[in-house]
Length: 511
Image (tube, rainbow, N blue to C red; front, side, top):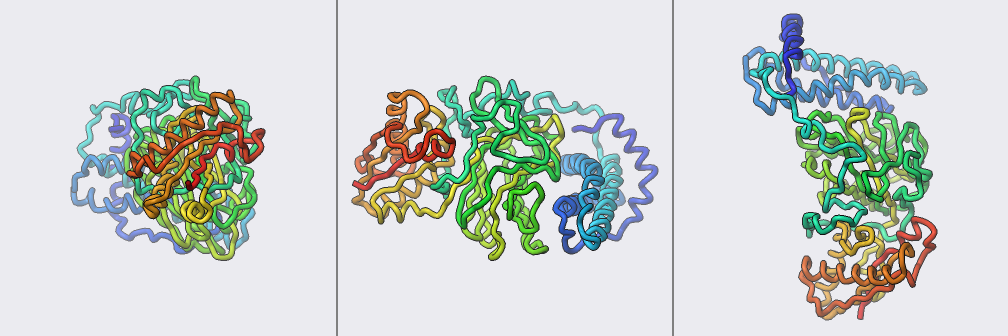
């Protein structure tokens, strides 16, 4: 519990002063209809009323003497923190209305004031409810290990099986669990990729833009570089992507530091698909977001803003707390209007008509908000956007071979990353359909490193793919042969990150 003597004393005073006001409120504050048209203001109103709805369900508890369960107390204590955070952000949200039309400003002020009224109700009601509970001021504060899930940047260790790009220590990693129903297939044509290898630690990466701040960091002795994102409702991080096809995928790794049971339920990581890559949110967009609290179940939310309307605004519960304390992998697939989101191998969202028929989304924007500055931190790496649409099964059957850069391995290793198994599953389906088919699996690398080492590594990776087909998808090993070409057959320029990503590939050849 986080309740202490000082807080209970304050609560007791509030109880005497505010109890008549609380008991007098029986009429529920209605959530405003329609949206303002300013993203930060709409988000403020929505999240304020989400909290209000959460607290209002306890309206009769104090009057009736209904005891709170431990879960109820946790919900209310953390809701109080969320209320504080939202009230502190209110002036910035009001400032965001500047530049909007007169009607939007008027509507925004009305809705924001209504949301602040709902937040004040929460701020007054929660202490009254907690004061009436049987909480003890003798309960210990969270231990240091509970307070922060991970150490500082220089002390954080690589978590096994989490998809880092560091092969060291692989022998002590726990075995990777593969979900055989995982159906994400990455795009086959690299449009943008960045692992920040060309950027200096402490700098903002050259292939990104922002209206806030962020810097490239490393963890301990690891070679992988990460971009740390700063928190803020309107702070955007935008890769240099200016045009997107009808079908594409987005992938990247995320790691955190400082998450604890005190992390707000409104702490969110948001990926927005928008019309252009400017540093303001566009009128037409689709936002996918995941919350990062550690005291309660997470939420995956999809929100669309199309022609001034909000046709989709829905959240689904998801259990991701364990993943969020380790390195975890985001995968997004856009197939015309359909949008799907996975974290690791969990499919969180699958919306068939998320994107509009008319507006074209040509950029990707990232945002985190309500992470406590300097305490709760979020980092991304291995960011990749690739053109999709290639059905590996049909291509292999029709053309007799297929090449893919979507099967990923740990750096310098033949250990297959979990997000690659959607592709391997498709290959297994072809083999299941044609019982007489035999395949040759050929591995290729980029030009980094020694020629002989790359040749050996490419053969090991081909063998690893064969082993996955045999052990996970029950393919007869006698139908599969393997080989490796190392770096000797490049299909792109090895001087760029995009070229290297294309050259790191696996080819399946019908024999």
